[in-house]
Length: 510
Ligand code: MV4
Picture 1 (tube, helix red, strand yellow):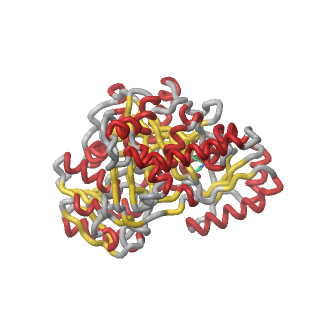
Picture 2 (cartoon, rainbow, N blue to C red):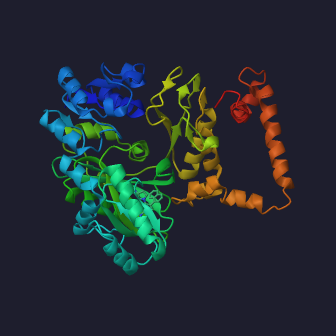
Picture 3 (cartoon, rainbow, N blue to C red):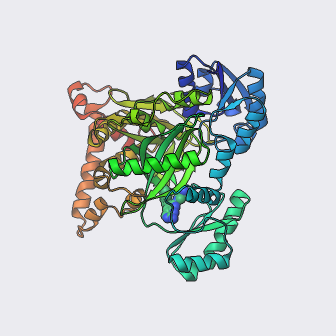
């Protein structure tokens, strides 16, 4: 096993990896930018090195700087976390050339999965189901002909894309040319590569992904699925495991396909196969993420495994310590991504100083955080503050537990999306697991179930009554239930009504 590992990342994921290293007796090396001198990951690591100014390209994306720190600190391996350099095949290759182990797949597998058209070709050859369309770049004429053949609606996608960039939905032949050209130029601008291809559009799909692990001795296993349909603008907001629509048989089929996809790509370490699932529960390969993902804790809860420990073992050449039949899923886990952003103001980032922080804990709660009270969230990076994960024997209990934890959670001084999670977790469609990739947009645009019920009431009087009741509750609650109030019995009963009220009134600025 490695004696020293460098973590080429920041925030909660750097902290997560440092914790795993500490548990395994491995020394840790942190890197940080100018604005991260006081960051949590820096104080938790055994050693820390400044690598440059705030802009990521000059620090967390600077391959030469990071390799120089690896050399100086004599780190034997680099964990890239997610984002930044984690899916950069050139970085993985440069690590290899510098004699430092990259904790991830081989550069060849990263390159293959980085090209969506090459990945489709490889998956086609491996017998993995995929959406009808093309598996190579197309000219406008070829694309028009194919669209007529597979029928509208279709999606034009950038070969170098992923995660929604350079993508266009086209519903009819009349808009095809302009959409095609727009997709091409966006692809060129974003990725320096204008190649685009075509897929049949799947209406309101679910996004379900399979976690895989592969060692360097030819063993590959899958660790169940994650349901990631609750997302906004291609950013996941809530993830859970298992998915309510995946039964034993579907899980076995998706798992076998994911293992086949990974082994045919020569994949090693942790990876994720993303699928689109249509309303008939057919599943189609979408793309493969060649990194540890943000939402890995939900899989850790339901499998009882530690994915970062396993990544370190695999990278150091160990065999997987179990095989597929040893993996059993138990219970239900839900993760909320807590962001410094304002759901009331178009989710605008809200960096700044965290003046007060009360974190949830108790049975079945895990909080993976990169922040602390007094820390100033810089505006230079992704404003995710923490991930709140709830685990319970079943989905209903996990939802109840998450709602309880959200009520305990308080972030003061900056805005956060905590109020949004309360809305989602109370929504009848979420509670009944009627979630697809359009769920959150419908909720936010007011088309959802609940607000429809409201708007059917044409006189508006009950809306006014509801608003007055809410205003009354918001102003009345803190007096008797405040943290320094004299009614401890009332406080115990109503949980954190005082925080809800303070938040709704903007008292603590949350
Ligand atoms: C699709 C699709 C429907 N049909 N492809 C969005 C992100 C990118 N990775 C692929 N995406 C989609 N591809 C076909 N053929 C719908 C989406 C999509 C989506 C996928 C996963 C999670 C959220 C999404 C939100 C909107 C659209």
